[in-house]
Length: 296
Length: 296
Image 1 (tube, rainbow over the protein chains, first blue to last red):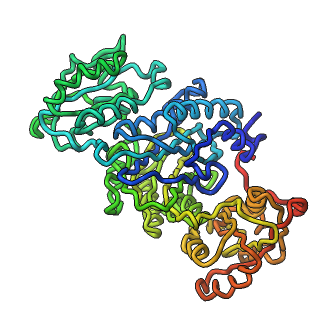
Image 2 (tube, rainbow over the protein chains, first blue to last red):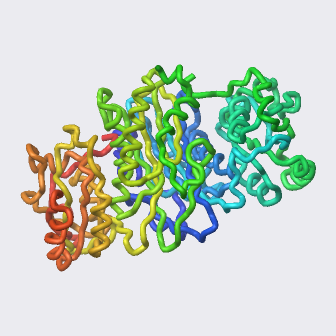
Image 3 (tube, each protein chain N blue to C red):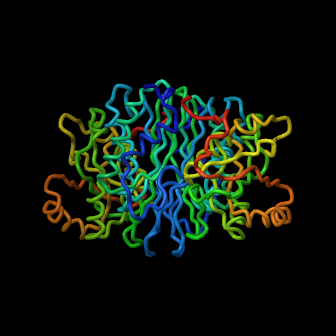
């Protein structure tokens, strides 16, 4: 059935069918705003929105469930970047009226499966028609203890740089199946003083300079050390983007302890020392950096 | 300059230039998530997202500042619907790379002006390119005292129905300049026990049945009583949509007091009694209702 035939109200009724009930959600989809009960103090509220656009972030013949997974996980990955706990999500779907309703239902199944994986409640959203490509936008709200909120700006010269997982090659479908490093980020801030952290969405080549700039320092990258996806060159690992791995900095003392503890806790996920932060003067010593940037 | 030439980082740097600083915003645009400090307890968190799509919600030759105003106010209007106080907003812009950067700058000026009007902080967002029409999506988070949170579902048979302002004719540019009824909603719940409320976005013809359904009751509409925009017929007032006025229900006793107090407080904004809620049996006695519904 076409969205045109199904209509908005019936579409929404279908889409929210699988949403889980949570005792702290007073009103979910179906009222003007979602309403949730706030937990205790000492926590900061995190807000993040992200979107995927057909022909930009996914191709039209991609499986809708995978597109939904990606749309949700892109947003949740930014909570990992701050060691936060995402709680509530809003989903906006902008779709051509000619799109098959079953495609959209599968898309939402992917969104819901991704949200469930991290106990996130989809509490509302919005649908609209469009004459252009299909777009899914996911906004989320989460919490983080004040002392465990890691920003990009806390890095200092001599801090050691690490990345989780392997970089590069995300275009070969990996970008539709990735797992945000939420648990890893929580473990890191529980056990170490992480000075600066971010998730790699535009590629190390674009993102590392951003972290360094936010921290007011430079960086030195050991390119040969980069953990690469099988079949990827160093250039791929630097430029491909959409890795959704964590990039973070911590003191040399902490760095020495981290490796062993990590392997015990996450034996299947590589953690690699890829360089260090430097005094600002030596910034930009690495050339050829240009991760994926929109509009360019 | 085209967005293609400007690039994403420089675009964002331009756009956040005018964002106001707020002491409770620890991190705004530029980090992975926005970070804000939570106020005290006894309040509920409200979440809402809404979007405007070129050629659906605004025409390509509309002034960008007015489009920005509309995009922000559509979302804020839903906070009025629950008597909430919007606090933080995230803005997603999905634009063709060929769009002039100055158009986008003006769009954001409109968004910011609208946010400033109700002391809402724009704390982050997202930009993406697209091969289709331009889209602006605004998500916001707000607060409301538990006792003052008004949902659609609290209406009872015999409750009196009111609307603020005048209905119909929004297509004639009014939909780009409207003022969400946030102050009016706050005043209402401060002084009266409002049983059910919503903002009229799809037209009274679509929205009143939703309020009645959510409350498990029917409704009787006095069509001749509808406050109409100059030049609008009763049908226009029922079906045009995008009024962004408040529709609410309260007990007959309260209704008798309301009119006079309202005129003293808001002498320039009409408040009109348009009917009442009924027992469920007599539901759907009004025909010809069909506000604007997407995909249809």
